[in-house]
Amino acid sequence: MSDEMTKEDVDGAGRELLHKFMAALNAHNAAGMDACLHFPHMRIGNGRVDVWDEPGANPMDMFERLKREDGWHSSTWDDIQLVQWGPLKAHFTLDFTRYREDGSIIGVYETLCILMLKDGKWGMHARSSYGP
Image 1 (cartoon, rainbow, N blue to C red):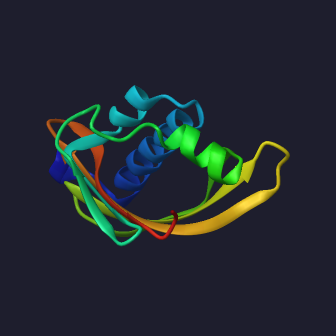
Image 2 (image 1 turned 180 degrees about the vertical axis):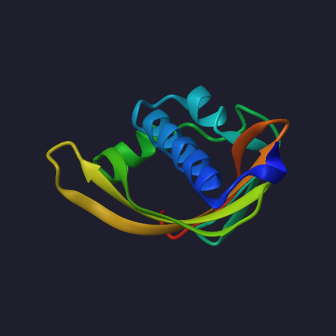
């Protein structure tokens, strides 16, 4: 099946996954975010490389930390672009905005996400972000 996937199939599957991830983030649903990931999962950002070996390893205090530090309320994908793809792996560039509850903007950031199809499921395997 995977060898028959078109660019449109990969793009659609990737976008669906990325929107599920963002919905889980905005709902403060750590398990929902983990469900969108493949493990081990790698995040590159803030001068660090973090590897989470299993679900639940992501430091989920980030919801309260972002709210405390910046007044974060929610985030949105502003632009999603499939830049490289194959039947088992896809690279997406993303722009996203973080908002306060009053709708004011905290910041706009860029991210690169690597998605992979494993065991019939697309999941985010790695990401590199310029957001804090």
